[in-house]
Image (cartoon, rainbow, N blue to C red):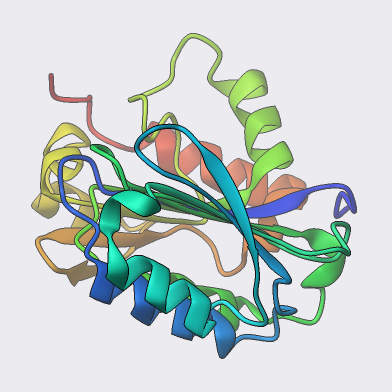
Length: 229
């Protein structure tokens, strides 16, 4: 049964790879093309840890573009906000030495979204960046699975267990067993992108709310080769 208090979590960690301003602007344009409600405010922090706020009308509002292009150091961290916090997704960008792109969306807001739509959103963002690790799952049910099945047995910090979707860049891919081993695993759907591998487990992120879906995620995780140090 779907937990109505859960949230879909999409996150990309770039590691030592840079997050270019041009790519970030392209990602904001992608978000504007989705059914997500427009944000009303952008909060941003500069290299001096001073937070500021500006009114905006969209993810790619001219105010944001001007801010990013004027001086990169003015906006090391960005958070999109909306007056209707229950319905609005939380979008967080960290552009410092270890860049992160995070999108969190409440379950009740995306009940009409198809799995294919979520997959394409994840992949579209991925195609705009060079990413170390990317994941997509419902956060609460994923944490519950980790506690239930993998307490003390988590694989790596960035990928403790398999999610519905994950992207492994070159370094994390090697840690998880390598390209050939993962592509040969019959429980995984894989696609080579950039220098890494996009991996899907099951047909839908909603599968994790079912006993069968949870069982598949656990089985697929345990079928992986030992982590390489």
